[in-house]
Length: 117
Image (tube, rainbow, N blue to C red; front, top):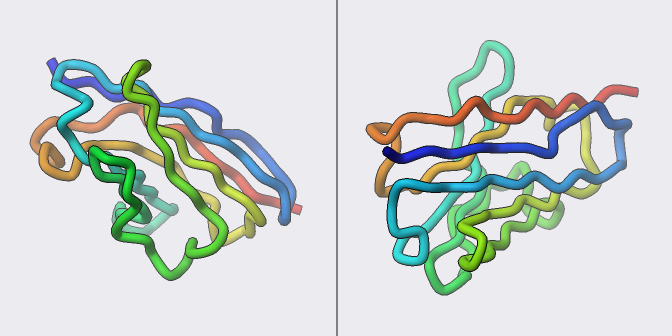
């Protein structure tokens, strides 16, 4: 069974940083590109950044370019999202998934990020 467990969210002030983690299971992690998605209140879920199976970044959304960075540790079946210079517009629930498996594989519970002065 494919499973994603996101963590690391919280309440931060504008300009601060957070690092999110996502542990994946139920498929061959090393063979799959991974991505981070987010869903803000009242909006659809959007993909913001991805990483292929040889750690090349792709699909970087303009809204996070230069501030968000993705990485992966294949030994831990984990993908990370380093978020810097956070703004209130980054407030959302963040999810990870493998683009080739989504949305059929389902979604984890996500991790909530709130950026508030």
